[in-house]
Image (cartoon, rainbow, N blue to C red; front, side, top):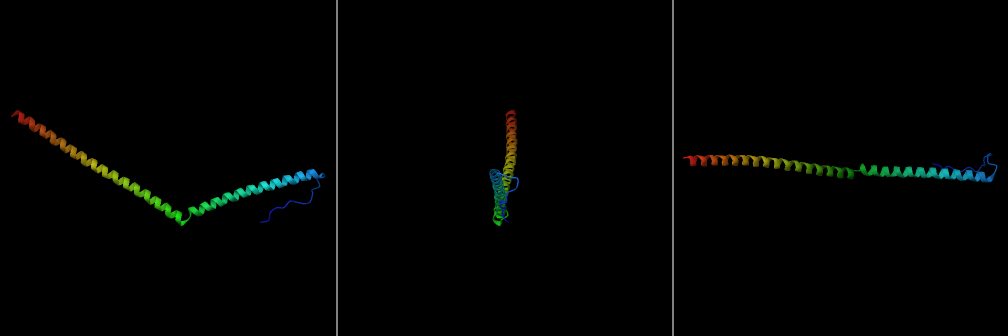
Length: 116
């Protein structure tokens, strides 16, 4: 890609050298600004390309899969603990109900013994 060059031919509308110098400085400033804008664009593109390379790499994929699997295992473990807790709660309730029934039966037996 060839870089633009400044013209050396003075346009006829510039009769006075200071007007030409002002025009030439303005053109230089515009070109400099354009180069800076293009440079920033290319820098952003470079950053995007680098990120894309990282994100599409095998290492990044493997790390993502590993993190996903660890998270899934934690969730499965948590669900397993929750199920275990629920089973224990059910057993506890059953035992509690059984003990309450036995207690009521004992109270009834005592009442019967007192009556006789």
